[in-house]
Image 1 (cartoon, rainbow, N blue to C red):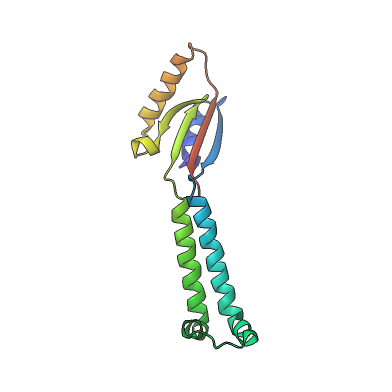
Image 2 (image 1 turned 90 degrees about the horizontal axis):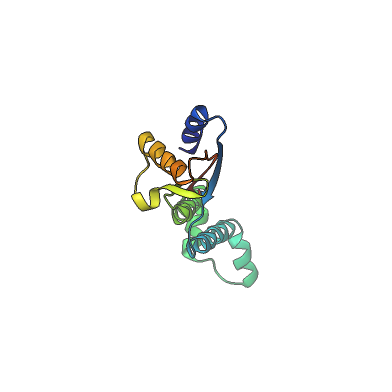
Length: 146
């Protein structure tokens, strides 16, 4: 979406400087996502090397780990897929925020939807008029961090 909006605006306004940033998720979501990533990494390493660790400790391998090692590829794929799915959903903000010369002109987080071209152009023209008619040349868009 960012590329489409940027290209369209630059086509109509060649002097416009368009910047894109990721809208970071609020805490504690990034911390939980990191913990999920570490957990699935630990589980993958345990599937690969768990037999050696339990043998060195003189303990029998848990039944679940034995089953995971018997179906190693499917177990690892499932852990990787589910772990990434959880971590990405935690980081998903759904944001598409547009500010024009420091003034917010559109927020998907507030409106719950993306702007139409006429809406976006009207908001940018409104920002121009609030600046006393001086042309503004800096547009910043923040989108969902993934």
